[in-house]
Each structure stands twice: as structure tokens, then as C-alpha cells.
Amino acid sequence: MDEIETIYTKILEGIPQEIDFGYIPVKNEATKIFQIDNNSKYSIPIFIESNDIFKFNFQKEVIPKFQKFEFKLSIFPQNAIVSIGNARIIIGEEKERKAKIIKMCFISKYPYLKIQKNVLDFGNVLIGKTIENELVLLNPEKVPASFMIRKKKLNNAKSVEEFFLSDLSGVIPPNSQFLLKVKFNSIFANNFSYETFDILTKGGNTIRFSCIANSLGIRTNVNEKFVNFQSVELNMTKTRMIRIYNESSEPTFFQFFYNNEGVFQLDELQGIIPANSNVRIRITFRPIETVMYYERIFCITKNHFLFVY
Image (cartoon, helix red, strand yellow):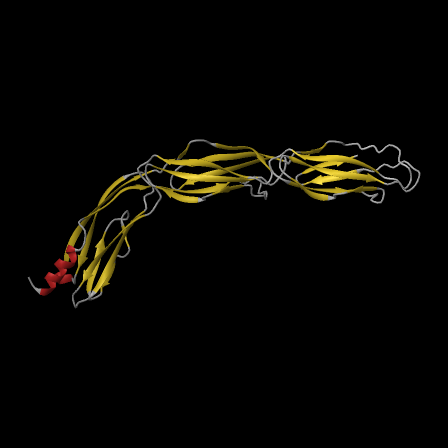
């Protein structure tokens, strides 16, 4: 055996006899890569004869001397099929060529995802709170499933984001699960929130799920909505007490607004009501002339509104 023939034989020995892709998902690209070494002092031409299903990264090329050469084989099935094919690898010049046949095969299947529930109900959520729920994506098939999640928009309307997903895309291995975490951020008091999302499986099915939540405002009230000082002499003062209650599990801010500050005075115009507690407010009445006084005092609490007569 002469030198060239020996070199060709050694190069062809580095090419696998069979390339098995196994199970692959429809409309997803699968790739196999292998290398051969040309340790000779010659640059060697190489040719590939193959069908359209199995595609190499070249048809005709030259393997440089003293270098590695990479083969890349790709398939992109459009349907669920079982495919077996051959490729002929030819090296050398026309008069002294040598060849090797590669067997190639794959089984393509449609990817398919399932979810255990189609509605994530976050229930009643206090304003300012964030709550998390979970959705499990199931891949019962023998092929990996690539997915993308998109929020369904209605009439191209812009909306404030209230539901946040931990992942918007991913790949689930065969016969595996994927944990998707969804957070709800309550930002509007006494508001019902609803969003729909589509899980698009590349080459497979589409699943739709919805998220619902009810935002609750801070529950506040006062023990008295009408404070009567009765009759008070000029240049004298009289004091009454009211309490602002916070019946929620979160603290909240309060602030009073009124006009006739010289006659009616509050010892605290603003502050914080602790969670599940109350604040005592002292109101002082100091008449400056002999008339009947009437004042409407407004108290605004964060995420709630009330007024005191």
C-alpha cells in the first residue's frame, strides 16, 4: 500500500460508520459534529454525496495539511417520520479516490406539553403584597420540547404588569417536568385582575392558562363620624378624642385635611397606623366668635378613603 493510500485509509477510519440522532422533535433542528485529522503533508480534497434530509455543512472542500477538519450534520424534520439514509464520503483526487459510506437515521415525533391546571387563582391579596403561585409543565413525550410563553393582548390595549413569570421560554427534556413560578403584585386597591397566557410548543401544541386575583384595599375606619362639642364659651377650649382603626395586616399612612384650622385643631395631622391597631387623635375646639361652627374634616389613608364630620 503506497503512502497516499495509507493516508486516505487513516483519514476515513476517523469517520463514524453510523450516526444515530435517536428521537428528535418535529420542526426543531438537530446537529451532530465529528472531526477527522489530516496529519499528512498533503492537502486532500473531500466530497460528500447525501440526500436533502441529511445536510452537511459542505459538499466539496479541501482538508488542509496537518490540521483537524470538522463535519457538521444537521436535520430539520417537518413531520413525524422514521428516516434512514446513507452518505458517501469521498477523499482524494479523481484517479486515487477512496470512499466510505455512513449510515444515518432518526425518528421525529411531535412535541407535546401538558399542564395540571388552566387557572391560577391567587385569591384575595392585600394591596402592596406579592404572592407566588406555581404551574407545572409536563413533557410526556420521548423528545425534548422547546416552549415560549406570550401574554394574550386584548385590542392592543396597554396594561399595567401585575403578573410576572419566572421564565418566558425554555426546553423541557423528554419525560420531564418544568416548574414555572408566577408572581402577582397587588398594586390597585379593590381591583379584580385577570391575564391570559399562551404556552407555544415549537413544532407542537399550544396551551392556554389564566391568572386571576382580587386586590383588597387597607381596611380603615373611625370610631366617630360626627363630633359634637356642644356649647363652648368664647376664649375657652374643649377637647374630644377619636380613633382611626387599621383592621389590616399591613401598616398604612394617614393624613387630615380641613379649612378652619384656627378654630379646630388636631394634635396629629399625619402619621402611620400600625397593622391591626389604632391611633388616637385629639381634636380641640376654640371658638373666636359667637356663631355655630361646622367643619368637614377629611382623612385620607393610603389605599383607602374616609371622612370625619
